[in-house]
Image (cartoon, rainbow, N blue to C red; front, top):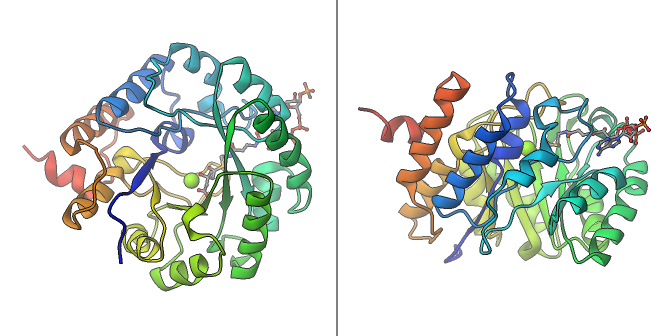
Length: 295
Ligand code: HMG
Ligand code: MG
């Protein structure tokens, strides 16, 4: 059966804005995050403490955190790849981080300048020190279904990397379909191959229009945390074929129809997406935003 409640892990300010051709001013980012909290989001991935040359769009991470109006009932995790990123995050009082591993050799090289093996050399001390400092750690694993250079990713390879990340002490593992090539049968098979589906989250990019179908398959397989980006913005600068994430509005529409509680105000999400689309200079790709914002 399907869960009664689903946690939506909002990635718009991070995954969405990391891939925008134009750099969004820091005060607009802060307002975006405030609006997401106003709409009822309880987990908002705010930004990344990565190398500013690798992702110039998020080079203002330190300043953004000083401008956040943090609410006690909202979590604001940030991406951290390495010790330098953790130093920066801790200096801003962050209490939850996300590391991001690759399931494939090619993407580990492109996204992290590491091998499948040496990415763990980078992550292990980060997770250990974060946990010691009372900081919770989520782990992502990217290219879980396929990779532009290596083709389909073997399920056993994803499970091996994913269980190793959980074994470091990460509380949650988000399975990333970075380029959106997964389909529902593949999703079911991958989730069933893990020993602990309750610790999994799913992270679908909607390149091939499969994100909602994949999400339904994941929920039926026992997953209760779903990543999404308000307005469906997003992509990965180190995987050209990646497009936006599953739109939060599309997800909320489906879950509402299923009678699953999210606590989100769809009207406020849509008006936030319309506001952001105007600033970004292009319409939201979300079908629900398009349908609900027609005059
Ligand atoms: P590297 O070049 O191997 O770095 O990059 P390094 O460790 O050799 O350090 C080189 C220099 O960079 C040093 O400076 C460091 O201090 C500095 P120097 O001593 O030469 O003057 N440096 C930093 N400065 C600021 N902040 C830092 C930092 N780290 C090093 N954190 C590295 C390795 C991991 C840093 C680099 O590859 C990187 O930043 N990668 C990030 C790429 C990225 O952000 N990709 C997008 C996010 S992943 C994604 O979108 C997928 C996801 O959504 C899930 C899905 O869809 O599947 C999560
Ligand atoms: Mg992503």
